[in-house]
Amino acid sequence: MSRNSILVSAVFVALLNAGCAVRASEPGQLDAAALQAQAARPWDKASLMHTTVVLGSYRGVPVVAEHPCSDVCPQYTVRIIHYQLPADASCASVGGVEKQVLVPIAIAVRPKTFCVPEPLVASGAYYAK
Image 1: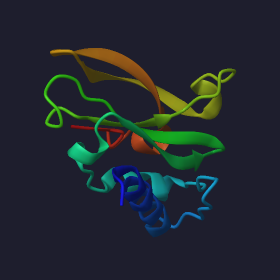
Image 2: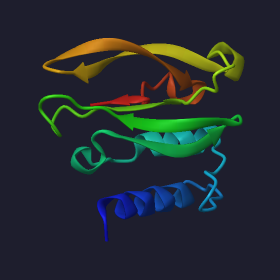
Image 3: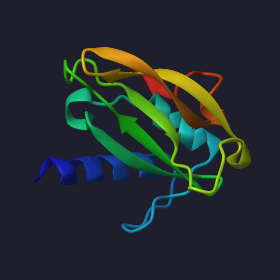
Image 4: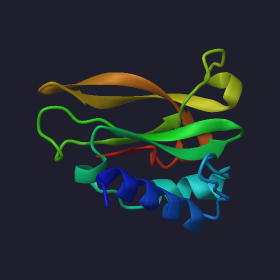
C-alpha cells in the first residue's frame, strides 16, 4: 500500500470517527465539535510533512491541515488547520479569524497569516509543532 493511500485511509477513518459523512469524491461537513476533535488528534510528522490534507467543510468552506517543513524534517514539521478560501472570499466573510503563525522556511521560520475557523481559535489548536 502506498504512502498516499495510507494517508487517505487514515483521514477517511478520522473523519468517520469525528461523525462526518464522507463520500470518496466529497469531503464531509464538519461542525465545531468535529473540528476540535480533528485538531486534538495525534498526527505523524514523518508521514504528513509537506502535505495538505482536506479535512472537510465548515460553514460551506473547505478546511485543510497543512504540514510545512523546511531543512530539518520531519522534526520541524508543523500542522496548521485553516480555511482554504475561495478567490472571491475574505476571511471575515466566512466567519474566520486571521491568525499569524511561524512557518518553517529554509533554516529559519517566517510569520504567515492564515484564516482559521473560529472554533479552533480560543484553544490555539489550529497550530501544532
